[in-house]
Length: 390
Image (cartoon, rainbow, N blue to C red; front, top):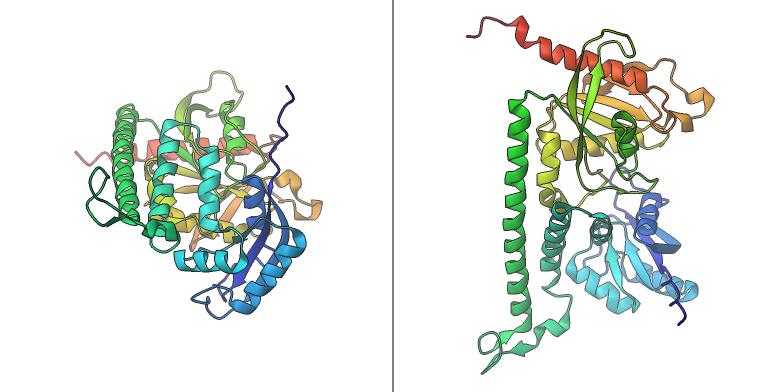
């Protein structure tokens, strides 16, 4: 019996519309990386400018005709938009192009579904997917308008199939939320136990593919999955990290802290995913310190920092103290290399300490540990400096 051939990757046309908003990715580089992460093969890219999206086809009829001709010339099997499409726009585009049309939101959901490993992660992805599908039932699928009902048929007389499907999805959303609520309570219990032990909690956050998991592995000698791809890991991993006051010196004192690796952020991360991953992202909101990992070799690192800050504010972690970790300095040109291992970076009008490291080579990690010792030591010393509060 011969083995079945491997399923070929879906050939995709990438489409981006510049609506005058900041940080438009004219080269559609990040969308292309997302598509490849999901197992797709981009064969062409189309970028255009509009003052506002076309209500029916998003890009307008002329550009839609151009995309259709490009799809026929390249043999593309689907079209992927960098922006979110309304259910009506998605339906109209599919009819006009004769091809499946998806948007950035569904693409990210697909990647999350592929990457989730833990029971909690799968539940969170399922909730976000169901919430997305519930908005697509309204106009996209015409077969859902068929009426059902009568004796021996589920649903009341004359009840439309779309109403049955909507009710089924609503019931699934309710069940998934209830199961996630149990997980949330379990995490809250674990956090209370750490608080009773007076454990200092550090969460690693940052833009996807900035090297968070590689840094996590380097610091705690763990084996969390790390790869040069977007959203390599979704599930939070927590380990104990021992910090010595003087690294390597004999007779030194030290303390253990709790270090958590969390899901990465990305531009236009769907709000439904942020809400669904609230249980996981709560680790960041409840942390004593955030290690904000930045890809120093990425020319758009400032925009990525701003996006991470936006999500942190949304989940209630905007006020947590941060230590910026500029990673991947081994990928910088000699002229771009930092002059010192530690300095300060202005973040939302505040000077925040910054450390330059390479998680892959280990360069700068001793300086990072020393900075962590300083911050954790200062946090533990602060209560002792105020003995007056009885």
